[in-house]
Image 1: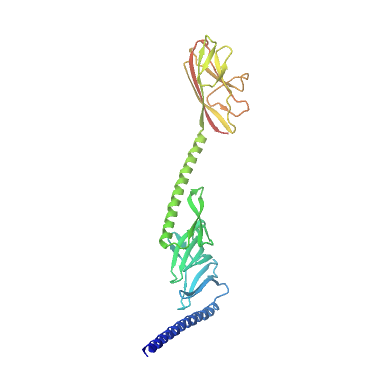
Image 2 (image 1 turned 45 degrees about the vertical axis):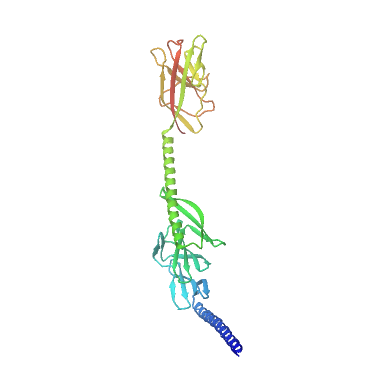
Length: 351
């Protein structure tokens, strides 16, 4: 008798459990059906220029996100969310509001979206921002409609693997009234925390500062190089030799000489060319240890057999196919041995 009663109680308990489960399923399905009916009625009220972004009706959320095209001269878009559970409608992105460095105004364009779990990611374009960083990346939490800032950039796009490609135009500086930028690309996961997104924005700011410093340093080096180019680069011809009487020759210490004159009253150099696109302007000539009361005289010619022309301060030599031979001549005690030096300094400038 007791066993029979126990079995009956177990069967009754199981029946109640099954009935409750069936009632629960039926209640959930009826609830979702009611939301579907409410959704159909609400969507029927949308205007012809309103576009549905995404809709979600489940145990987590019962709402629809859509964009409204404004009829003002700006032709911008406003992103709205309507909650089927309480009938509330509100704007997702606030007007005339800044989030960190991203400024939003009445003129915002909606570009793209992606749903990832409980997040609706939005890509928008704000004309309040400079053109290079006008794209804003946000996400909305489906559970509470809260708006979260991810990044701002030049351009962004969604990838198939739940990542976002970010194209940044880092501001380096201003040159001739124009912004100088450097474009780089990286990816962001759609599953990061708000703290991780904030850390990334901080890192991007530091990176922009570093790139700007490197650019300024490079520009300063270019400026100095241009200044040096305008002022000219020194080109020096060194002459260092000794006459050797008993061998009727000379010893060349600088390796720049070609030979002695026939009367041993001077020496001449190897042919030296002026680079194409440049000119050489004589800056100064120095010498030492030349015998006699008169200083040596300096000449140049187009070849060993060419006409000698005296070098003068400010003399300009132009490029040629043959090059120039430089001569040092002295008048007295021409056969006296000893070491002699000279230095001819030109400034090489752009031609």
